Image 1: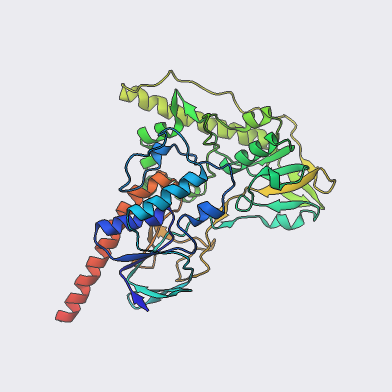
Image 2: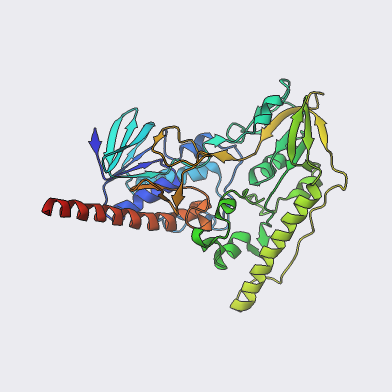
Length: 421
């Protein structure tokens, strides 16, 4: 058994950023990674994926300006290279190819059991990611056997699919990107649309993330959000980080020939059944987008010196008044169903009673509830709205490193007082 002050589980962007923060405070620690640095980026992403955020928004603590085009969008190979270089630059105490099999309470700290040995530490940082398992609904069991199923974690490119049609279930960032790519490959695509967040790639001549960053939206704290649970589970915005900076929404998909239908409500005897409320769902997404753009315009007027084009509005989402309500999945026209229905974390190795009924960690801004000295990183809206993105790790890790340092100091004072008594 080896002792250290902090064990960080996961060597993605969040875990590495935390390593940098602990080094700044001279707190000894180790970073445990089941594969290589950026393992999920290497093995669980489709080939053409690029970040949704521009390069200027993806800086990590201690990292200088990005050498690439600041307004460009990194490919997966570029993300992997960035994180590998970052790990080396910060001299992260990395133990790769080390799989954590159990974390349990031990005295005033924790035992972290791995396939390479056991670490004991008073503090643990969980940075293993929130997208470990594709969240596929139970109705998938009723898809006919003649249809292949996959998720964004296993999909790589249209070349891996047969020539028949594809049903993409879910219209967040992932769903619309895959629908667009597959439709352009010549395969007919149907996309099932539920609640979604519509955003333009650019607004008034600037990237949408510039507006969210400059106006302060991304800095809104978790304790300032009215419905925090709902906000943390909103789908990712309909955006694509394409080099041509185009917007990608349901109108753009329809223009390429994608068939847009309502939310997949069920599968009965091989027939996919879709909600008839598609028009209402799209109208609500349009309304929320326009409210956000109104807030940007108001902020620009108050600021007074914003260098941007004139306010603009976008065409409402156009859908059929009589959308398709059912598709026979067994008639041979659909060859693949791709479940773009979200993800969930995998904490099967966490033997500490901190999970809610949905298997997610109970925490207050990253400090794990009922587990002193345990911290969470990489979750949506962890401490701020920017937490969902790589660039959010800088502020999140600064806050949690300060909290961890205070926790260690408080425990040392308690131990010293006990010895004196």
